[in-house]
Structure formats: C-alpha cells, structure tokens
Length: 296
Image 1 (tube, one colour):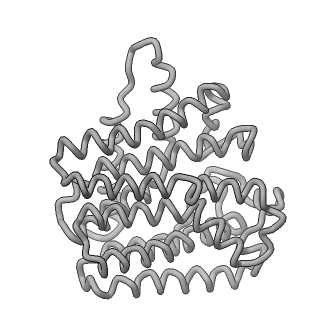
Image 2 (spheres, helix red, strand yellow):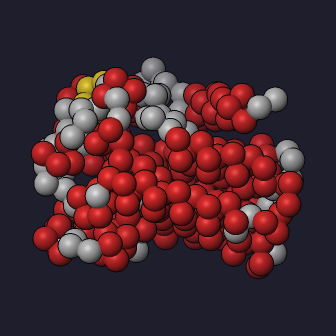
C-alpha cells in the first residue's frame, strides 16, 4: 500500500468516527447539530487527526485508542475556522468553496456552533478515553496539551496577534511567533498527544515535537506560497487574497523563491528529527513530503 492510499484510508477512518461522534439529533436544539456537521464535513484535509494517529502508530500499531483525541482536535480546528470567518474577525463569506457557517446559519448560530465544537472536543476526549481504559495520567497529560494549544498561549493567542498586532509583523521572527501559536500549536499538539498516549520516552517525545514544530511552520509557508501560485478551485478560495488584504506572509517578507527554499529546509529538518525511530516513522516522513508538494 503506497503513502497516498494509507493517507486516504486514515482520513476516511477519521471521517467515519467524526460522523459517529457528532450525530444529528431530532430535538429542539437540532439547529446546532446541523451547523456543527455543516462545518466539520465541509471537506477538510484531516491533517491534524491523521498526524495524531500516525504519531501514536510509531509506538503502537493499533491506533484506535487515540481516535477520540484525534477527532477532538479536528473539532477544535473546525471551531476556530467558524469563528475566524465571522464578520468581527476575517469576515469571510466562503470556506472550502462553500458558504461560511455564519452565512449559512447566521452569526448567532455560528458562534454557538464553534462553542459547541470546543466543548464537544473535551467531552469526547474524556468520555471515550475512559471507555477505552486509557491510563488516567495519560488522559490528563493529553488534555493539558490540548487545552494549552488551543488557548491564549496557543491558537487563540496567535489569532489575537494576527488581528491586533499586524503593524508589528515586519520580520520573520515575529511572523514565526504568530504562526507558532495560530497554526503550529495545534499541529504540535496533535503529534505530542499521539506520542503521550503511545507512552513515548522523553527522548522520543522531544523528537516527535521537533518534527511537528518544523512541519507546522512548513505548513504555513506552503499556505502563503499557494496564495500566490495555487489553484482557486483546488484551494476552495480566491488566489491573492493575502496581498489584497495586505497581510504579512513569508512571501511578502522574503519573496516567493526564498519561501520555497525555507519550506524545503523545514521539511528536511522535520524528517531528520525522526531518525531515532528508523523505519517506524516512514508514514510521518511521507506526510512531510506530501505537505511539501500539496496543492490545496
């Protein structure tokens, strides 16, 4: 089985569990379930849950014990996208080629759908992990990583920097700081939680986290590149929006060619950090190379 087939199979598996975990209900609050499902199943790449499962797989070939946390991270990621699109933030009418949540259901429902997904992530992680008899200390460690990554020193903090400190983003260090929080924190959390649940040693945990830090930044650099040279149909959004909105990006700061070189350097460093795992991390290496060439 080649890498793309394995990636597809894992993504499909995540999709099936998400459908199980966010079932629609025929009660008075049915609207919130509709709105949650609308954004969760709008066509995401499922990179974060696949990364979590694959990092766990380095230590245990049967990764279904990690599935609740994998799906929980995808819910947190989706909630952040719903809120990012709101008129008070990025004011985007479309997401992945479809109407954004607030355009489909209204602002109030979109806010509540995002809140519901964040809450559901923690409900799911705790309830399902207990059913799977995962050691309580590992559950607590994983919950701590997930909560910190999505909070003020993680994803939310990065969004604040993006919204209110844009005039200060004039160099690579500041831009890297913002993306380390906004995009990188959840990607690192995915890898770190996978390693924690897999009972990784301190050395192994560090190697996985180094991999994820480089991967997360490379992921963002790739996004910046695709906004210049990507295909709008594949991306599900207009090309050139970063320049039009005068957003600081790697391309705007160091140029397109230097951004490509930086992306390659980060992917090489990510892959190099996995050397201690030998052939146990082949899928993670493939994932890094896939992100280097992705078109969406």
